[in-house]
Amino acid sequence: MTTVALDARYVREKPSGIGTVVAALISRLPARAPDLDFLLVTHPARPAPVAAPNVRCVVAPYVPDGPGTMFALGRWLRERARWDVFHSTFSLLPHDLGPRTVVTLHDVMWLDDPSLVRSSGAWGIFESTFYRHGMARAARHASALLVPSAATRDAATRWTGDGAARITVTPWGLPDASRTSPAPRPRRDPRYVLVVGKSAPYKNHDGAVRAFARAFRGDASTSLVLVQREGDGARALRELSRAEGVGDQLRFVPASDDAALSSLYAGAHALLHPSRCEGFGFPLLEAMALGCPVVSSSATSLPEVGGDAALYAAPDDAVTLARHLRALLDPDVRRLHVERGRARAEAARWDGCVESTLGVYRRLAAS
Image (tube, rainbow, N blue to C red; front, side):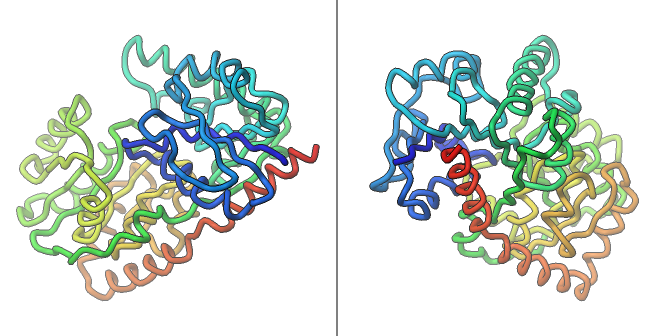
């Protein structure tokens, strides 16, 4: 029987976009493919994230996106298991994994523009070197590449050496937690605009502050709520908000759990998501599922995710983003985008992603 090894180490206690994707796959693949055996490489915090007759797990001692994974995981795992196809689920292609490899490329920002994602100082230089090496290896040498959007496919073709020949678009679905969590009772007073995402340049939280300031400066009843940890990025945003005249309207809420985030989505005036680049964009679907209208940038994959349910502008077009935020004060406009958003989120299922992924596994195994 064909064995597919799949790196599931991002499924752990810490929530992440990568973890969401991998959890969705491993919860569905074994039942959809009883003819395949699955070897899950797991994190010590979640040594056995799923149980099925055709699943076995091995706990790896290496940090998922660290040098140990890149240079030692393959040899370490070969001493303990055998597989026919290896699926690296987080954009990097470690060494020594064999001739049939699948890599999920979430985006190619480390290759296109590292300044959008890297940290400052010497650590940022190390990050850039490490991730560019791992992702360039993936783009050039993986047997197959899976990407979540046409925009990511088009960006990746600049790095593969053979265009899109090895790339399969496998659009992701609504995160399971968003589909199963009961919708909390909305809280409309006081009003707040929600921004969700880690503190990184590509998220363009500076642009969110500027757009919010244009829309609601002087309106003490409306606040801007950012779901992220306090830190250097938060301090810089506080300074910018004071300069923009909305310092007293800015709030930071640490990410806690799915239920708390769902409550924030359900009570928000809008999700404001002016990212410069996204491989996919889960927050759009999460917001729409809970009746929260979306004001998004028109960059990269986001129009693919939001369709006609979201309102769009260029990432730096604070005037248009602000106009969209104000437009949602109209009950009729709001109702239209809430209804479209719920329909969009409901239609975003994982079936196509799972079937396309299995098709790639089987094609490689047969080769």
